Amino acid sequence: NAGVTQTPKFQVLKTGQSMTLQCAQDMNHEYMSWYRQDPGMGLRLIHYSVGAGITDQGEVPNGYNVSRSTTEDFPLRLLSAAPSQTSVYFCASSYGGLNNSPLHFGNGTRLTVT
Amino acid sequence: AQSVTQLDSQVPVFEEAPVELRCNYSSSVSVYLFWYVQYPNQGLQLLLKYLSGSTLVKSINGFEAEFNKSQTSFHLRKPSVHISDTAEYFCAVSAGGGYQKVTFGIGTKLQVIP
Image (cartoon, each protein chain N blue to C red):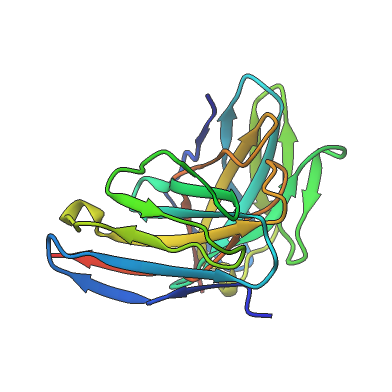
């Protein structure tokens, strides 16, 4: 059972480049989400999805795009990378997505934008 | 709106000594509370959770936390720490009904000194 798988583990981009961070889960979780982790700021929610075809914005959505075409996959797109997007990105999923369901996290993607 | 305060960004402690990591929250509705642990270069893992019932909850590796509604706290304790407990610990709160609106604290780095 792989859980939540994120690729790539590391990425370096130049300002203005675009890329997609991949996230896949094999637990049949309805809820999936993307967080960014920055020193001294904890984790902040970027976007989330409560099922295939349904997405919504979190706390810090600007500069990011998501889609959910299948239950398993929830890619995060950076349309035009900026140095402020240098961060560690985590994908997380949960069963049902209700507030009492613990989150299952991937191992993260460390992104540097120069 | 809900918020989480972790008062200590770093906590050094000698091996086999007790430790307490503090967490306070604010919310206008009833809450669910979580502690997650993050080992180096990994994603977050659920350590323990309070959903309802007994206010004292325990993990399999000796940690415990007590929900104190009057003090709006959910402090994490362990009577005797091991080197392997060195990690970053995040307190999280979700409140109300509906889908996940989880707020994380900024994290506390526990450094166990041999």
